[in-house]
Length: 226
Image 1: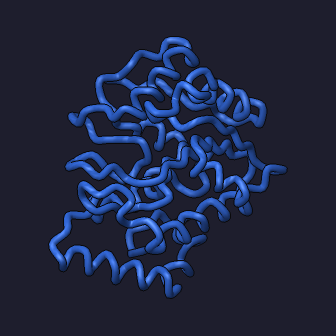
Image 2: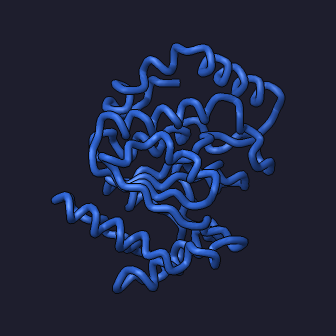
């Protein structure tokens, strides 16, 4: 599973692919397909977040939980969907917050966040695959161990990264981050069930850019062209 990984990430994660949990995870994914289950995202996109945002380019981490489980939605970036797919409710709320937080932000007609990823925003899900139409179906199979190692590697080997932890699940990962070297911003999840309890109005996007500028890093252009 490691063959197509970006070289910087491969250097810090290579050993993970030889560990028992990863071998078990690989066997589980093979078995899912042998049983006829559709798994998202497609194999080439499983590590899309790492391959689009190289290890030494990460400035911001936005942590999600699971890939979308609908057809043609997930493409390996948390909260992001392919062009032509209806913008999911949580991402709509992210866009609503951007409209009030970032001057000149205009709600795009699509949900593809590749533009952010290419600027150094690691759009990482804690679980990197899911069975079609079954949310959470690949949790506790090994992915969380792997993605925790991603967070720990960034915490240990990099500086001044802004981690955006939305919702209780993401906030549990704060213990993996050295907050003497990095920044952790927390808020409610942007889901329609919770966005009004602290996500909307959090101004996380402008705050992130202020922190990047403070450390002589180029801010993120959050605007997304249609």
